[in-house]
Image 1: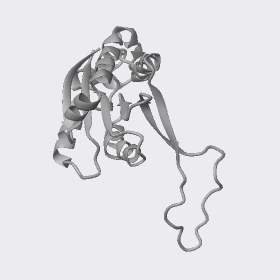
Image 2: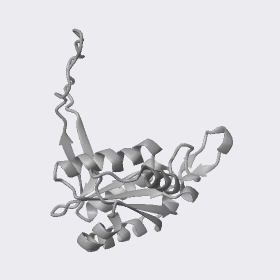
Image 3: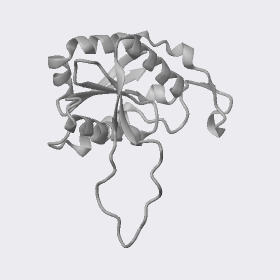
Length: 192
């Protein structure tokens, strides 16, 4: 796999190069080490691609996880305390689940404040990662800069329908603009 595109959101490129140049070199090496030929394993059952072999996003995500973990990166989880706001007019919420809710950053390198999200899924998750999750982790002083890793359209077209892509994401971020709460994020577009 290789990086074929990048989008600088809110000064993300400068922040990564100024503070995390060695980590970026490691990220590039990890990306280059993922052999996409191993993950063209999903036989399509969709009408428009019936029987066609496609890249399996879940398997690609697993390959990234293995490589990042080998390089010393780890998930970062924060548990949520849902005590904000108030219920109205006698509404009684469901009993609290035994599973504590949480938010999770795909990868943070110990000793840094660089957060990585790998997203080969639906479009809404890309936007959420950059415009909400990274901001939350920034407000909690866990990260100060982010990198979002996504497929370019050519690569996404070789996956199931509905996988979003770099070009659409960059266009939306450009037209959304930035806010004073946004972290600097470098968006990396990958192709097989």
